[in-house]
Amino acid sequence: MKGYGINIDIIAGNNYYSLKARCEKADSPGDYSDENAEALIYLEKGARISSPALQSIFFYPPNPVVDFGGAAEQIQIVLSLQDDPTQTKIITINKAGLINVE
Image (tube, rainbow, N blue to C red; front, side):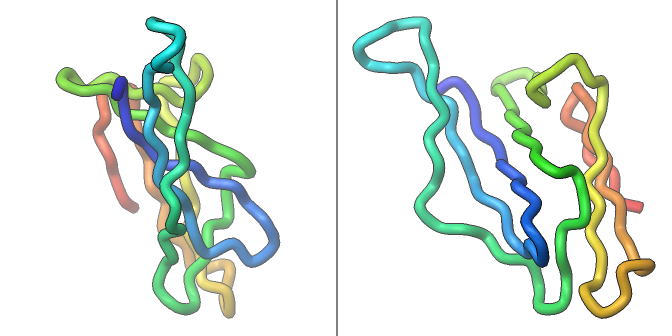
């Protein structure tokens, strides 16, 4: 396994994310594919993921290297309440793997 991460796919009312693993293909050394975990992970009742629209975040051990699938230095994930979308928490993740919640 090269790394692990999460996949966020925003659909109307989305309240879950999935875990992923980036694994080397047995028949093609040096080539990797993403494998989804079977189960979805649900947020607490009444919470939802507001943004980003689609995001995969991978962490590569042993040094904290983070891949956002592009050149971004950091990303933000916005969580909100279903009943009051103005009530939010912003999760920021940077390339070094630092996670901050505001």
